[in-house]
Length: 216
Image (cartoon, rainbow, N blue to C red; front, side):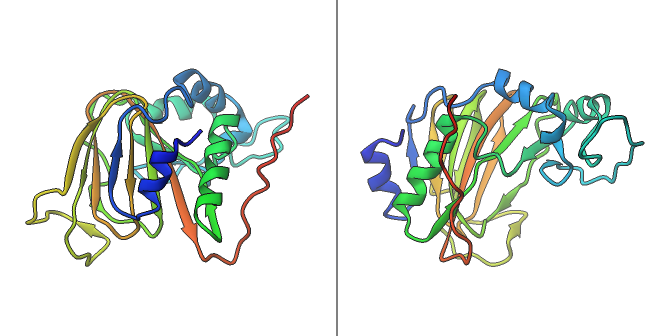
């Protein structure tokens, strides 16, 4: 799944941009199926950027009552940037990418975080920030402008940076960008957007997930 030239670049732990390196690994239709699978939309897994508190009544036959009711879910999806964590097994391709990244980085654990927005207001986002893990980010649908800075890091979130971005690109479906840990970056949605971030944490006390794929 991961081309050798992509692996060799990310092993350098330098910001990198790759054109059409991961085509067709996920889709809107697959995301739609997940959002309609009630156990998958637990409030600890699916997050809205507004961080509001929600409550709802229990409903029959639910094994997990902490899942967003579909009507509430769709209403909030229309106005928010959304993220879903613990999504490394959404399909075989995504699981395989996680497995390869765990093989590339010794003692690492990799997840897949799905980011998406269908909101008309595209200005809402995470702003300039850095993460505690390396990230390989793949544009699935739509387009996004990514900026990466090379300046020294201070606070995790920054309103503005004096330096010009080291990398500034518009990502199209299949494109990817690698951002090392504690490197300032920002993603700006330019359209209805779907992307997957593969956070790579290493020297962790946890062992990687079992990547075996069940086939019947």
